[in-house]
Image 1 (tube, rainbow, N blue to C red):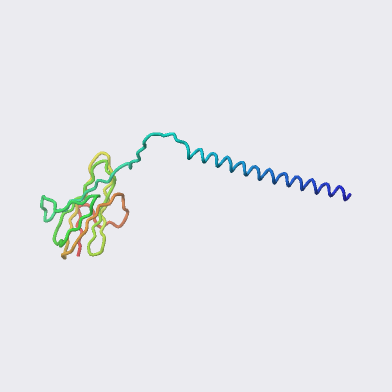
Image 2 (cartoon, rainbow, N blue to C red; image 1 turned 45 degrees about the vertical axis):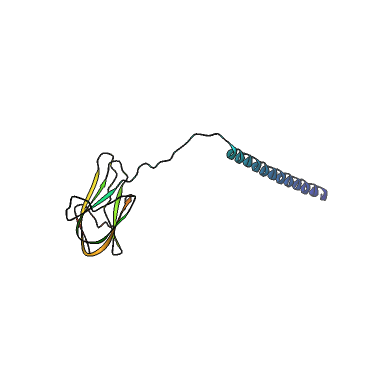
Length: 167
């Protein structure tokens, strides 16, 4: 009886050793295949030509600032540059324009450390968009105008055909 138990233990040890060996060999084989595939992937020299990635649209929003209903703008703001006007005081008319097909955009006015956001002009493939408002600057100060792309959902203080008072 003791002999039968020893033979069963030897058989189970042999089966365990055999399973362990097969598992280790399988893992090594998988590593070899993975390394070969990775090496082949990075050493392949086939060229697919040039590919250029472009965004679907550029924001071409501009803001023109007029003093006292003048026909000539004292400054124009676009996506390339923000504009700071020194010693502003009085009444100004600001017109935001967004050409058809342009990405959406809005304007930020910074005065006295506070930012004022305009309503956004949304992309339209068929017609140009415009937003006009009056800026009333009560005390002389420097004001910065910055054009931004996108749609900003916020408490916009600058609305079409309204007046923004800055103290």
